[in-house]
Image 1 (cartoon, one colour):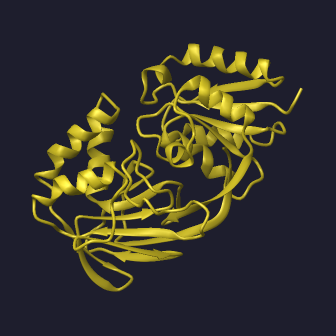
Image 2: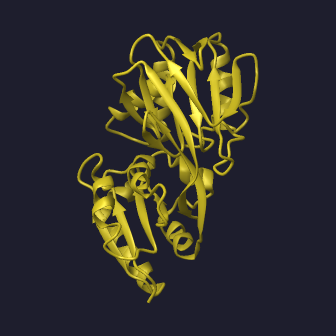
Image 3: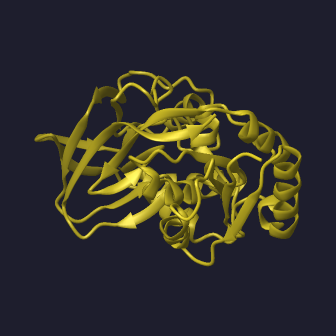
Length: 291
């Protein structure tokens, strides 16, 4: 028998199958057994609980992988303690957006994701930090953080809810002013992309790589209302590119200064900062992922 796997399951993840925690648990155990392995399965009870569970159990066995069963928020919580360690993270993407899993090309159904997990190999990717908070997909401020905050308050999850919240927010949102590496800017949104998308195949930085040691910084400048349709089309067809309203650059880090503490998001999770200074930096080749 090979080394065991530790699965940490978020019973409040975004999909209906994700909420069927007992069924998911039984299927994981069955597939693990058929692959000559064993599975220890733990359940999260509240936000940040997954991080506590990883720290408590990561050295109790020689795990083949510690597996996030949920969405990008769950992946983030589980990956945090694994940054810089030899223990790989596995992903069973049962969340609403599944941005990191989609960028990595991982299957999005339970059985196919399990098959890939047991057949896959570890690969090393970059991670990043915003004011010391790790993120693995994207982080940023502006419209995306505003939508993330509103989305987190919804009872229903998934793409339809995200699109509905975004559409309503679009008409009332006002661009923000800030300084990016000392240069005054006004922007609709500012994104730091380690992976290329927010989730739900909304590709803010289609050219981003998880293994280049760089962040793709995307500034979307204020634009006329008619451009919103073109922006949404480019976002969901993986065709956003440099334009009169969109600026891309690559860097190992950046400093953002604002007049008031901003709302930010990291891997889709909203966070109200208490400081007006944001420091973002890449951590090259710092996380092992089963792909």
